[in-house]
Each structure stands twice: as C-alpha cells, then as structure tokens.
Image 1: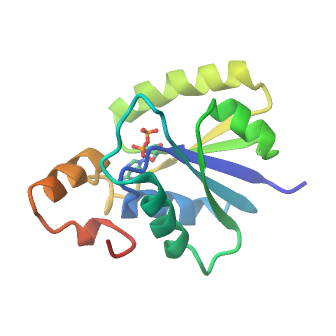
Image 2 (image 1 turned 45 degrees about the vertical axis):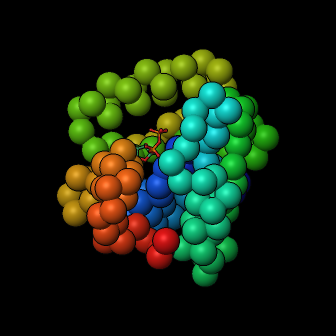
Length: 150
Ligand code: ADP
C-alpha cells in the first residue's frame, strides 16, 4: 500500500527547517502532502497563495511532494487524501508537550492516523517562523532561513 503522509503547519513562512523534515520524510513515505492550514480568525504575515507558490517551486522537481492549503480538521484532511501518517518536526521539549496532545486528539478523531515525529537537524533547530517574521518586519535579511527566494 502506498504510504502517504500529511505535513501540516502554518508555514508562515516555510523555512529550511520545514524543508529538512520533508526531505527526510521522503525516506519513510512514498508521498508527502505539505498542507498549509489557514484559519479566517488568524491573520497571516506572508500571504497564503504566495507562500503556496514558493513552496511548490521549492519542490517542483519532486513529484512525490504535493502542496495544498486547507481549512478543516487535519484528521479529516488526512482521511480525504487516504493519508495514514501525520509528519511533524520536534525541536525541543516545548514542541514535545504541544505535539503530544495534538497527536492524542488526532488519534481520537481518526484512529487510522499515526503521527510520526522527526527530530530536527541541529543545523536548523534554531529556526522559528515567528522569529523569521520579526526579522523580516524590521527589514532584516531572511534569505538564509528560506529554501526559496522571496
Ligand atoms: P504549527 O503552527 O502547526 O506549529 P509550523 O509551521 O510552526 O506550524 O510548524 C509545522 C511543523 O514543523 C511542526 O511540526 C513544527 O514542530 C515543525 N518545525 C517548525 N520549525 C522547524 C524547524 N526549524 N525545524 C524542523 N521542524 C520545524
């Protein structure tokens, strides 16, 4: 059976840390669907459709990677795409606490869904989307953190 994983996130913006998780995930899964969540209650810093284009471009040579946007429960999205795995990255214990409860809830919502965590590579563990946004807001150069040119 084809192994499909969803890699869900806000990706505001998608960073080299996220890219690293996706590329390493390809050793485990046949297909990875990067799913940009959007929520009408939350305003993004980087516009959704332009981020979608940037991520698609970053992976354009890789047919095993799809990039989509979504606005529903991740557990339902996974069902719709016949994905039995949720891929997430773990940087530190704060991520662990948060991810642990999301994984439990997702399992409850969709018992076929297994969450799989990859420990972040030390080279990228310091990259946080929130800090990248802050640097960009004040005019700093963020190109070193992104796998595409803005
Ligand atoms: P969310 O809002 O769902 O936490 P993010 O876009 O911040 O979405 O992150 C999506 C996933 O990527 C999460 O599993 C997060 O732990 C992981 N992640 C975030 N930053 C990094 C990084 N620098 N290296 C590896 N994984 C990361």
